[in-house]
Structures are given as C-alpha cells and as structure tokens.
Image 1 (tube, rainbow, N blue to C red):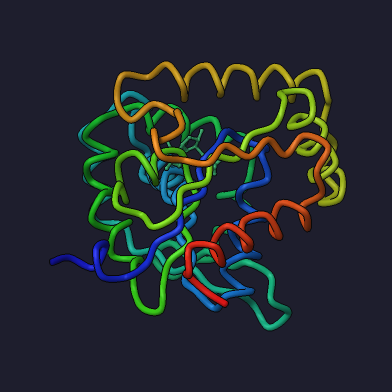
Image 2: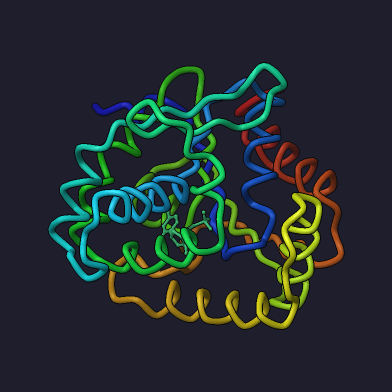
Length: 230
Ligand code: DC
C-alpha cells in the first residue's frame, strides 16, 4: 500500500484566485499537517526552463528539469514563504505573473505532468497532507479523504489578485489581470491532460462574498465531520 492510501489527504482544487493557496496553508497550519503547493512546482519547472535557456516549446527538456530540479520549500525567520531552487532563493520569481503564465503553458504538457506525479505524492507524510492545486482530487490523490473544489466568480478573483499585488507593492492593472485570469482559466480547463474540473466526489465551495476565515472554517468543519481532526 502506498503512502497516499495510509496517510490522510485533503485536496483543495480550483481556479487561480479562488483563495485556495491561502486557505490550504491556513488549514494545514491549524491542523498541523503538511502542505503541498503543486502550482509552485509547475511554476518552478517554467522558471528552471527559463534559467536553463530552454526553448519555450521544449517539452522533453522541461520534463527532464521537472524530474531533476532540486527544490526546497520553507519559511524565513519571520514566517514568510521561501522557495529555493538549487539552493538559490527564487521566491519572488516563482510568484511573478510571468512565471504563472509560463507554468500554465508547461502544465498542459503530459510529460511534465507525468514527471511531477511521484514528487507530489511524496508529500503525503504523517500526520496528513493538505494538497492544493488543479488535479489533486482527480489525478494525484484520487483516494483523498476529503475533496474540496473552491471557486469564485472571475470578477471576484481578479479583484482579489489585484489587491494582493498592490499589497506587495507591484503596480497591477485590473483589466489586464481580468483578461489574464480568463485566459488562464480557459487554458487550464480545456487542456487535454488533467484539465481543471471538480472530482466527482468533491464538495464545491463558492467563496464569492466569503472571507478567507469563513472558507477556512468551512473546510475545518468538513474535515471534523469526516473525523480527520477534532
Ligand atoms: O496555482 P498557481 O497559480 O500557482 O498555478 C500555476 C499554474 O500551474 C496554473 O496556471 C495551472 C498549473 N497547475 C496545474 O496545472 N496543476 C496543478 N496541480 C497546479 C497548478
């Protein structure tokens, strides 16, 4: 039996800007479980490709990097996220809009997705895992104990992203962000491999008009009802 069957997993899937990153991190922190931010892995593949000077359409090259890249997720002394690639701090590059767009492109390639399967499953370690992504409940952890599909209207997601970027001090244009989110949704949900869609047994949570705290409470309550934590 592999770890995905013995270690409890909660999957939180959904489109960009649905709040799943923040919600997943907070749920994992509250229950003391591990966190898998699978989107960061696709971002790291796109970034590695750029750093290695790969052609943007070099599928095999990106898949090889997906297998070989040396990645470390951690936090700094103040608790802020720190992502290292080959020992170098690449957090800001990983989180940029440009890398997000690159990630969405490489994520459409089957060899890249395949190369990341085992790496993602290896995050399932005791006492449990909260897995955040697009295909956590459908492909990577189909036997997850609880599957959440978190969504919100495209307008609300663009507004949230805009606020987030402004808080980080980067100038962002709301109309351009809305366009990018719509494009990314379209690409993520229509690709042939592992498209963004709710698992048949997922609970759909529409977070439009809900605060992050309310969504976190809803997920914690669902997990409690399943006996995953007290
Ligand atoms: O959640 P994010 O913005 O960090 O994800 C970046 C891109 O990676 C997103 O456009 C789709 C892709 N992705 C994916 O295809 N499958 C996942 N499990 C996670 C992300």
